[in-house]
Image 1 (cartoon, rainbow, N blue to C red):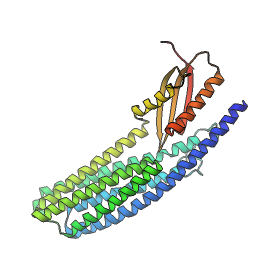
Image 2: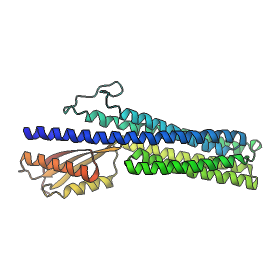
Image 3: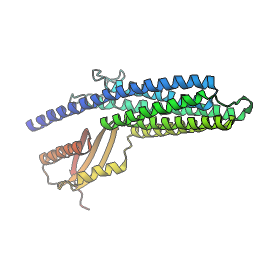
Image 4: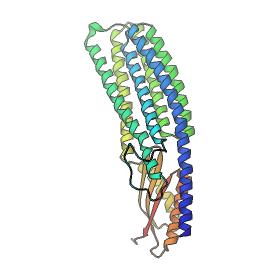
Length: 327
């Protein structure tokens, strides 16, 4: 009994350590996202203004694409704010079932899901913006009389946007790698895509100006819309899979092989990994010698949990030992 109590205390201490590390990472991620908001806001305002005075559908589409970046960053900030609210003892006003260990782990892991929830909402908004951009681009192509060649000032706006987005991409990429944060890494991919979109916008406007092709601006805005749509669908898909407790089978197989190396583990009967925001938890059922004593199987489970924490960064591993079936 004393050994069990000591283990529970050590486990709770380890959990609070991991929780504080993750919360500190989320605090740093917030600073990166505020930088994103400022950069995207600057670009959107400049591009919208220049698109109006310069008569460019493509630049307007790129401005809407960057507006989606603002929405994405703000929603992630809200999700992270909820995840970091450790002083709240409920979830959106609803109490969770009693936590036997009184550690708050269950509630905190649930809070971390909000980072994924708001990423999902971002994907939906990006899809809506993409459809609007594509619709207006198609309308402009069908109404040839309303089309005109963009003004040279719009080329300046697209160039500025591309340069700023490359800076944002580098900032997000280095931050995501340092903090090992999935949301920031995804933001880096999104900002690189936005930089490429701005580059495409610059090329399209340059081509329209060089060859005096009014229709090229509208056609390019449709292409930009397709890029936004693809990004939105990809974000929606990945977030949906995470919320549906989908986990890459190849990675789960790596976990399984690592556990099977223990000589006491005769088989891995079942394994199930889940994302809780940016943190991974694992449930595993192992087959052991039917005559193994309970205390030995318990200690084996603790050693496996420690291994998974240090080797793969899994914050919580629940191990169940069952008698192995001879095949």
